[in-house]
Structure formats: C-alpha cells, structure tokens
Length: 263
Length: 263
Image (cartoon, rainbow over the protein chains, first blue to last red):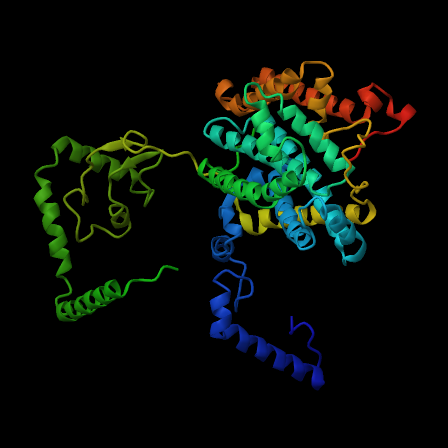
C-alpha cells in the first residue's frame, strides 16, 4: 500500500520509506508473529497460495467450523440461501444485544417494565439495541424454520444425516422456547397475556398438565416468580443448552460428509 | 510444513555422510554397479519360459520404431519395468538380459480387484475465499437490514402488565397463533398438545419414516407434497390466527375492522 502512494522524491517518498520500514519491523517482531498464525493475512509476506488458503481455515478457531475445501455446488447461494449460517449469525447478534440489555434490566414485577422504559428513553442506543434484539429474535425463528424447509426439499435429512435432522428439530424447538421466554420479560400487557394464552395451552397436557404449568410459572398464576424463572431460562439455561446442540449440529455436518450433494 | 523431529534429522544426516564416504571410495571402480545389476537378471534367465521370451522379442521388434512407449494403460497395473523403453534408443543396456528384459511380467491386476477404488475425486473449491466471502456478505446484508429496520420500526412496549385488564383479543406470540387458531376448532388437549406433538414427533421421525434413498425431487413427489401441505397448513393457520381474528376470537377481515396483531 505504501508503494502505491509513492511520488517522485520529496518528503512523501521519505515518509513512505519510513512507514515501510516500520511495518517491516513490526511484522517481524516476535509479538506480532506469536499473535498472527501462519496463513493470517497480517503476517509478513502473505501470498494468496493454496497453502495459505488452507491455513486461513485451519489456523482460525472460528473459521475451522468449515472444512478447508467444499464441493463446488455448496458455495452457490441458491443452494442453501445461507439460511443455516444466518440463523447462527442471528444467534450471535442476539447474544451480543442481549448482554447489552442485561445491564439495564431487573427481572421483578415491580421494576421490569420501568427498566425497559428507562432503557428506551434514557440509555444511549437503548431503544435501537432493544429493537434489534426483538426483530432479530423474530427473524431467527423465521430463518430457522426456512432452513428446515430448505433441508427437507433437498432431501438432506436422508442417511447419513438422519440424526442431524433430529438435532435440527430440537434446535427449532429451543429457538421457539428462547423466543417465548423472552416474550414475558418486558412485563407489559402484551407480554403478560400472550404468555397467559401460551401457558394455558401447555396446561392441557394430559395427566401432568397442571404440574407442568406450575413448574413453568413458579406458581399457580403468572407473577414475579415467573418473571425470574423465565429470565434465568432466557439468558442462561436455554442459551447454554442450545449452544451444546448447535455444537453437535455443526460437528455432525462435517462428520456426515459435509453439505448434502447436488440434487 | 511439518517439522522433522530432531533425532530423525540427525539419523538422516549420518546416513547421508556415510553414503557420501562410500561413493568417494568406490569412485575409481566406475563400472561396479553394472555387473551387480546384471547378476540378478542373468540368474532369472533360465526361469523365463522360452515361448514368452520369443513373444516378447517379437513384440519388441515390432515396437522398436515407435520408441519409448508408456506401459500400463487402460486401468491395468502391468508389472513391467519402464527401463526396457530406454535401451531401444541407445542399444542394449548394461543391465539387460538376453531379450533386453530386466524384469519378468508376473501378473496383470485389474484395478478394483484388490484395491477398493474410492469414488472419483470431487470438484472442490477452497472455503477461503470462495465461501467465507459469500458468508461475510450475507451476514453484512442481514445486519444492515436489521439495523435499518430497527431504526425505523420500534418494538412494542404496551402499558404495564395488569391482571385486571384482559385485552380483547388476547393472542399468543405469532409462532403459536396457528395452535391458538386450532383451539377454535378442537378440544384444547387436541389442539394444544396432541396435534403439535404429532407434528413435532413426525418431523423428528421423518428421516426414519421416509425410506426412499433418492434425493431427486422427481423421485420423492409424495414426501414433497406431504411436507408442502404441512407447511401450507401451518402458514395458513398462522395467518388466519394473526390477521383474521378480532375481539372474542371472532372471524374478521383486517381491511374492514383493522389489525389485532402485535409482534
């Protein structure tokens, strides 16, 4: 980059020379080389070679969810529509925005609504982040559902991928539960009555319906205990469980021979 | 690159030094390797059947004009030496037997009879940059859409939850509105527990019920029809429950009586 800016002689050239020298010194330092592993584009003398292309994937904790190479049809956007990846991306986005929201929220009937209101009116970017969290959640339910439809229409649940499909259905259920537990937290009229309707339906489970409802609500009716219970489910327990299932899901994609073949 | 272990490198260096010393020693006797190579060929002479020798001679005479020809084509592994090809050009070699043979043909092994021939190599591309760049752009689109949408559309926050004020209608979150819609048609146990249970159970068991190994759409018309009907039913019920149900869960037209729907 420094070379392209070079002009004939003058102080500019000298400055560029100094910059190049500095870049060289920094990039050859032990600290720099210990941080950026082979294949990193920030390493000295990075070239676009097949070996470095492999290293980019192998030497990155995030990218190595992927294999080094994939079948050519797998990179066509029209095959996957990126739905699985986007579901994962939305999950990360929801985690980030959710952590932000946790700083301003107390899960008690007396404070929950006021906290949300204060978040929207007096916290910098509070309204925006809450909007992103809510719309992102709806979008994730939609993208997970569409991902399932895509997989079905490609017949990608067939052997050897049967069990990964089952894990996928569990992930869909967990996504719905995450969304539903988050629905109560604003503690407004919408939250209270939507959850009332939802949990009343669960109460009709044969034999132990009332027990299921009692455990979920932390009482006979929705109240402050329910709020705490669903808060813990929403921010801790369900994310913990869904991360485990996601890890298995992604791992099985690789173990079952990568993305399903062309039709 | 893999690093060579220290002890192996040392051993290799020693061996190299030894070989160099030996070569220096044997330099005066230049012809030494030739007789050594000739010996086994001579020993093998008597064991070659006469008619095979004759046939080979004839074949060699025939192809002498053609010069060096590659052996072992057509998917067969032929145990002939490449060596006989070279002497054709430059007279009988030092290491050649009577017919110019240095080795005998033992057997011809068809490929696949011993080795398990793996599937032919697939057309693959590097994940970096081909897939990662697409994923990056998709994530960027998703993020920018969510951001812009969140700037312009606010998440709902109704008034504080009030047990004494039941809104009419009270609706569940949108992804449960299909179930709530079924409540108007069936007993709550059927609509709220049995049918969704069958739906989810059926989805999970789909790969074990559908034994059809083909993933081509034309081979699985029944499965695709069934799934499409399932999806359409879910969508229709959800849309009716969302937009076509007003106060008292009565059927309304949204364009006539307005929307009773909150996300």
